[in-house]
Length: 541
Image (cartoon, rainbow, N blue to C red; front, side):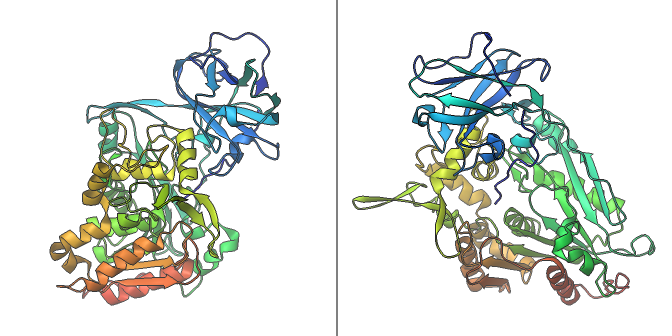
């Protein structure tokens, strides 16, 4: 789970009074906002999505203030929009948290235009789709290099006026500057042949490695590897480059076990992270990671390339990946230490039972329709509802193109629709669940169900390898999926699962062992589970 915010967008749009070329199709009456971009910002036509963000203050740019319960965001798809041509956002375009522009009260607001550029992908499955191409920013359209934005402009808005508000996007987001390597932190990126063939466009994978103290001065030593799963990041693993984390002191201490920690970068055209599995919409990311990226790591660095010395960990999205990779590749990895994993059982997709519930947003209790929550504080107070985050994603992008959490689950877990985009698990506006799609999710990516149906074959390979941690007041209700998985693991037999599942009362997302504590737990686990004759000494110096 992750709500991303714009980190370094520099404000810069102009309120226009000059005539512009004819706008794209719009409703005949009501308020309208016309957005265009300059030729200097982008020389050719754009297929993508234009936005206007509207805020009551200029404490920070309006685009940065948009969120499921933040400043209103309205979006409109464009095809081959030319420089200087206006795209129209009006009352017919969906927004969030206000559904329509005509719901915006009269008043003075700061408005900011934005243009999100899509790329054409002619995929190997025969579908052609338009999606935002990641530019190594982690699939975040708000800060993606090449996207165009404008300076916030203060406007008096009258919902009854038909005079268009004209905004210009004339600034381009700069390329990402990669951090420099250091003595301990190394990065590399490779073009994936597997993914590039499937997507019909160059696709890249990457890795960031944290090397142990003494790596260079011990050239004959090979090391165990901890694969830390999670969202796209160019930071050093385990918070090594965060001064306040304290992990750097642990890592460089005299008595710290010498291992390598690796984070993987595999953003997809749908999200900052592919979930590291093969899927109908994302393509063969699982194959690319296992057959290209991991071998590249093991050939470039001195690692012990044996299952007992490949341990998985991660939290949230990374928690799910850590469990999934262990389940789908039980002979390759030696153990999984997962914190606060995304839904392990889709009877609790957060708190939606996609198999039995009729609606994801509401529960009908007789005469009363109760709205279903999405996030909470540890004292039980609700901070947002299911419809809020889903509606925000719909405003950010249709066809699962928001780059958001619910949309990547559809792209990862679900089938391809007739138009080449993911089939919706539920109607994004109403919340009505499509149980045919849910059945596909169940047989492909419901990890608890998968383990149950494959336990005779998987059980002997997974005994003792699954370790799961979660707070019992998880912010996103992910503890319930863990409870369902735990119930199965406790009753699994022939063989016993011998799994570890730990709950922390009153703990939010994402509770679990961290830093030095986690590394030491993993090392202790390897000591107890390595095969006879394994090298447990040379990397302890």
